[in-house]
Length: 234
Image (cartoon, rainbow, N blue to C red; front, side, top):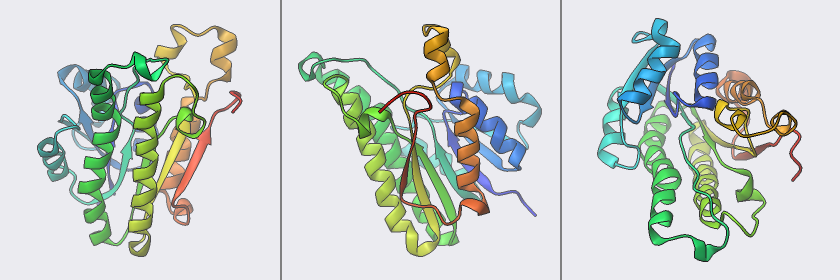
């Protein structure tokens, strides 16, 4: 029997590497959207033994609908979407953001989520089963005076995911959003003190949660927002 196929974004990143390793261990076949040749090279460095039989890389700009449509063509037997890709641009006051900053963050976080859901949800509904997991951000649940446009872009990710959960509910398609504060990525290790880093959420915790939500054990969970802050207070 063919293994279920998961479309994953951000697989070459700090969190993505941990999630990819965990899902391959669970026996999923992964179709990974990579931004460019460098991203594909990072993926190959970590998972060359799985490529291309268990892990297929497809270069795609997730803010372009034609690229997302092409990505879908490679995801035969699609069972789920794990959307990890996104980005952050720092800002304080709303007036600090330029119009270009706004467009950049929407194109980085909101538009890819919309396009991926637009193209995956009909397929999963037709199959009569499936799971979608996206990644939000703590400020979307606990807004502050700073980072307003980033917060807005990630709030939209949560709203789109919850809408997908309701649309998918009659078809046994579930959708949930994991919301971290800060993660124990190599990038964050480069600037955080040991004391700070210890408060961040371990990557393996997020990977295991995603694996659970994709599994039969998680089939009753949909329409949820799951904060994963570890030791960082709300």
